[in-house]
Amino acid sequence: MSASEQAIEAMYQLARQRYAELGVDTEAAMKTLATIPVSLHCWQGDDVGGFEQTGESLGGGLAVTGNYPGKAGTPDELRADLEKALSLIPGSHRLNLHAFYLEAGGRKIERNEIEPAHFQGWIDWCKAQGLGLDFNPTYFSHPKADDGFTLAHPDKAIREFWIEHGIACRKIGAAMGQALGTPCVTNSWIPDGYKDTPADRSGPRRRLAESLDAVFAEKLDPKHHLDAVESKLFGIGSEAYVVGSHEFYLGYAITRGTLLCLDAGHFHPTEVISDKISSVMQYLDEVLLHVSRGVRWDSDHVVTLTDELRAIAQEIVRGQYLNRVHIGLDFFDASINRIAAWVIGTRCMVKALLEALLEPIKMLRDAEAAGDFTARLALSEEYKTLPLGAVWDYYCLKQGVPAQDAWLAEVRRYEQDVLSRR
View 1: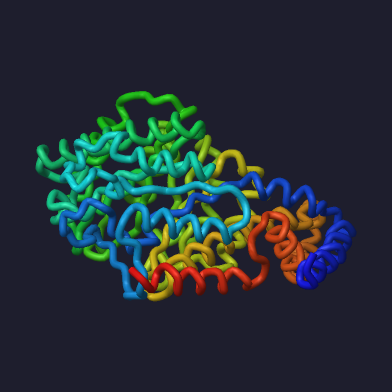
View 2: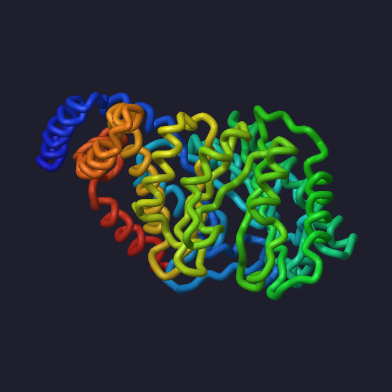
């Protein structure tokens, strides 16, 4: 054991004792943490480019800023980058894949004609890596989405095209789940909306509900596949009205039995999803989270250890929702090393979960139940300086990944040896 590892071990033993004094078992917390997967989003590695090679711009109100060198340009490059990122993140996790990351051998495959075979390379890779796989229809970056409408389009033929795409994606998701032995969450988000105030708010929402009903008509085995629907407050080019609002999808998920996806960057800047989790869980069996960081009008900054991230993790743990909440990430930043972005965001998510698992929640709840709100506030603030870092470093050590900031040197070496040569 190196001197650094010995120091981590010594600090951990002191931290373990401090937490034990508060009734918290650090070993149990780390054991639980190791069972919680986070779904890494593939689109951080190539700036939401995909592999259709159609020449289409990103579209859908999405924008990626920055031109940091080394972007993945092929499926193999993207998988290699993901392998490097995963080697620096403690725990066993998942991959979240978009439909336009298919591998078609250079052939043009229309979105409504994609099949599981076009994703066999990803399935095989995930099986070799021991990863679960999640999936998303791609309702953007396509000529039939250029006017900002897909499933809610007034043109029936265009709606039918996107319905067929959604049906195809569900079959692909089910094949992924069956092949990997873990349910694939297939999440539907569409960009549909208006830049300025519409004269008809109801019509597009009626069409969207009908289209979704057609997409989800076939019942799939939940052992292999789960459906989710994702809302948004506004987007670039749809500032005034988004068809798939939170209220629309909350009602849809409750009445149709799908998962509801709460994206941390898709609400008003003063709204937080941590406050919504316990509410929607009263009516839904399971939810999907897209953990992101909204900054002003951008919804997709790299996740950092903010108060809101901590609150999200606390709500999942405090509510005993670990087996009912699917955690995924959704951000894209091309202004920094893309692998570092994955590592920073995922390590922060996992660290927030560890902090929540280590919280002396019984003392807080006892104070609250006794009406002692003074103690509740005082203890909440004192607990913020408990030695989380010592437990985190020890957890990383035991998981075989770099502790503290040592992972950054690994990313720099990979950048020099691999990314700089692309």
